Amino acid sequence: MANFTLKPLKVKLSQSDLMLSAVIIVLREFLEAALITSVLLSISRVYRLDMRWFFYAVCFGISGALVYAYHFDSVSDWFDGVGQEVVNAMVQLLVVALVTIYSVLLVILTGSEGDRLDNVRLRYVQSALRTISIIVVALSLLREIAEIIIYGSGFSASLEMFQPVLIGGALGMGIAISLGALIYNTLVNLPKKLITDISQTLLVLIAAGMVSQAVLFLIQADWLPSQLPLWDSSSILSEQSLLGQLFYALIGYEATPTALQVSFYGVTLFLIATAIVITKLKQSRNFHN
Amino acid sequence: MINAVRLSIAFIQKYRLFFCSFLLLTSATALAGVETFRMEIRDHLFYPSELQVPVGKKVKLIVKNTDKTPEEFESYELNREKVIGGGRKAVIFIGPLEAGEYPFFGEFHPKTAQGKIIAK
Image (tube, rainbow over all chains, first blue to last red; front, top):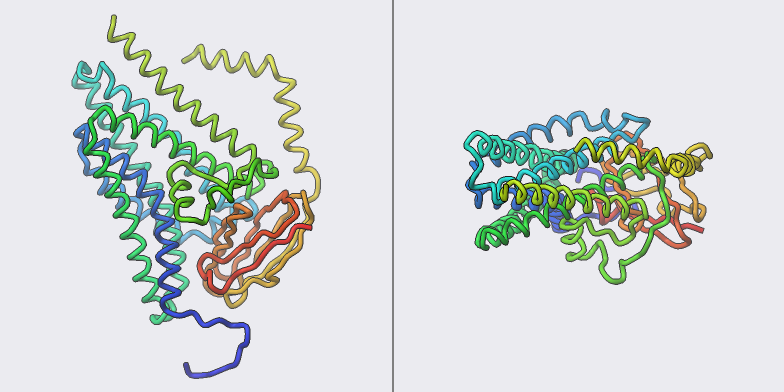
């Protein structure tokens, strides 16, 4: 350091502090994306869909993230300074809509009619499942990677600070990918029927969690009314604990949700589950005819 | 499918009074003024690091980041997170809060940037 100035309030960050923070930040971001990616990948594997969609999703995710990060400041100023929340919420809701369609298509693919679907319809369903997978994974990756790019750009000035952040980020990403791989390998080795049921359940829960997140963003933006939290379960499971973070990524766990969040969560669960059940009933009716 | 849509429309029309009042009540707060508080991020620290807000009311927090690098305002207790670019300012709505202390931190520099909102 060329100039030494005494600044009593300044805390010197050690390199390991920086690295540890980077690990945690990047891990948290990638956790959600890793989860939904591994669920969609395992379904593709089990139903023998072409898994190249994953490669396209990663490419679109990275390029989209670069574009979003570049325009981030102006996007944040949209809608009187709440553009960030609105865009994030809309992306989440779009993903939820796509996951709903995906779940219905999956029922069609696997239902009693699945073996008797004619080739044309089968190709349609498979192609739709792959396309939705690309969009969902790309959008999830886009948001997370953009934030990581913005985070990393803040440290790009000095190599001394950038190195630990880079290494920590790589570690965090590695951990998230390992977790995703673990989930994937666990799922694909289960019996086919069980995989479908578990995946469907996970997708519904993930979707409900995303809706809750979107609602929270809109409350933060004052587009939806804010209320006192309905309950405080942080003494039972803290959002800041490891398990709490996992449950947040998995089912959208919130320690202090508002009534609005809880209602939207419940309604989403109900609607998607209903869509799945109705499709199953229609299937069995067609089958018996 | 069409029948489901018809049924939903009929349902809304039947209970239109309820839906109208619900929408009016929830939007009534938008007509009332919202108190604004300002905070600054300088050298990866929050100024002020402790901010007092009224209990039970929604407030508007304007955070100005005077650093050149971005920071993320985040709080588990408040359930808020927002990335604020270098030299930009951000609008965050908080509350209504019960009486108590609600810590927040800068996620990009968690060891330095910390603070709390005190609802009294």
